[in-house]
Image (cartoon, rainbow, N blue to C red; front, side, top):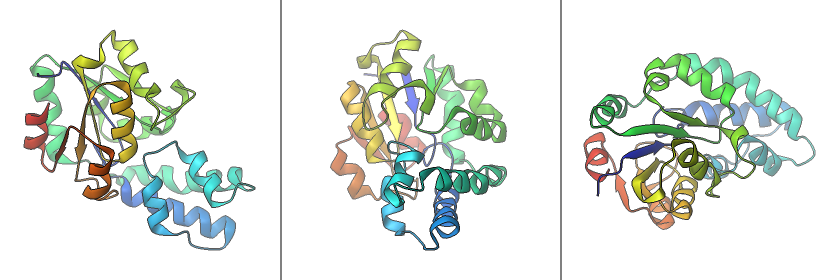
Length: 212
């Protein structure tokens, strides 16, 4: 059944932000702790409960310093961001088909705004944007997805959630929506996504369109 509501994760799904996230995590750890983090551990946590939780894993006693160093490094890099072209081109097609679109991310809304400034079409086409401030619990809990549906007055069976991380898939599954994993994010390998149990795993915008 074609879903009338399509929700998207942001990092690694719509925008190619994996490299700047990893770079900023390394910068924060080196600056504050004097050591490089384990890159695989950093990558495996991207897309999950959010930046503060990630920094707590690095050092629970220096979370505030780590977050400050990360943001100071990361926010200017949004000017260098690239989007996934095929996906951006798909968004107006979905709108022309009568679908409603949204973003559900663990980013702060201020940081989401930096991405929307870089790619204004995202802001123009989205009917709802859910960020870290909008729910107390975060992915892999279903609350952010459910909040987006609440604001759209939509039912889970009418919606799909598209993401590049296992946290996205688990959140969508828990919310009762159709989940589609995307393999182009460069952060999480296909095996990790499949283990989370998406309804489909796709590698091109054309495959994504067919899965929705």
